[in-house]
Length: 365
Image (tube, rainbow, N blue to C red; front, top):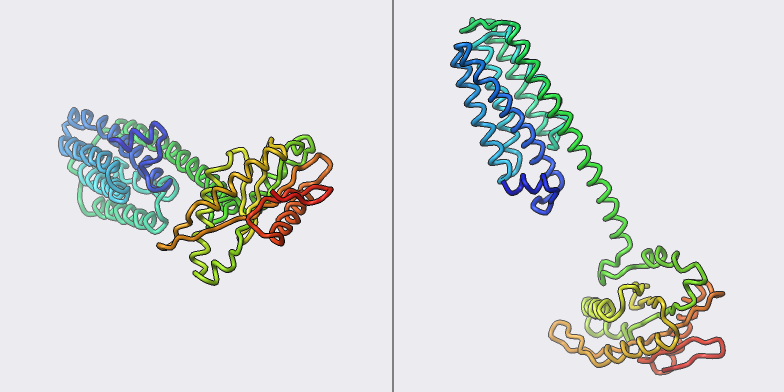
């Protein structure tokens, strides 16, 4: 019963998908409701001396108890099929025992609605269930035409029983339909959120991409927020040589290792993205120029000293970083452009260095 308890508590981790959880919950709702209905029918039919139908209801109770038990252990395919087969068998048995006037056969078309709308199942399986229900309804009519009923029951009692059953069914259908609709909406919203998230993530390095950076940069438009912010552009030295010598797969591994180090060494509040190719954009929030110089220099030394192990090879990788302390009157795009200028200055003056852009000139550290 653990899965059923988890549904009640709202834990979805035990299900492979929202659809599986929705079907499990809906089938359980139907099974428990019908089990209660048949439990209420049993004393009535035994008191009315219609013991055959009392036994049929007891057997139906057993089926629904089995449905509840297996539904939380296996996929809902077997459970929902058992519900449909029980409805078909019960309607045929009822018509055979108490006749067409008992109106139990009309449970079959009534159940077409939840089969098509409430059960979160495939449309193909829904049509199979509907075909079974229609076939059972025609067979009930055939029994009515050629087989006289064993008992005649008071019509008033039948009306009360059917009203009770239809009321329970209506409540179950409304509740399960609402539940399935809620799950569908939740699943749709989560898919949209995941797509938006995936669109902002670089698939290779798992860092943010330019789209992610653009969304984050909107929060830096305010000049006050940029007053203590440093922008830095990082580039892997001789990356093309790594690709040409060891192959692009080796280059990809180098990018992933560097990205892991960036994620590990920088703060969660910093914005880190793969800007393109072997370039990474770093936005160090609440960080002045001197502090940024210390942080970036320390990271450059870590990269220089650490071995990049790729396919059994130990590679030595260095980086060049250009950075700029953003002042309030400078726009974001211009700050990134200054970082690029500092980066290419470092590339042209030996690489493996930190270059600070300043209005009075570049400063290499």
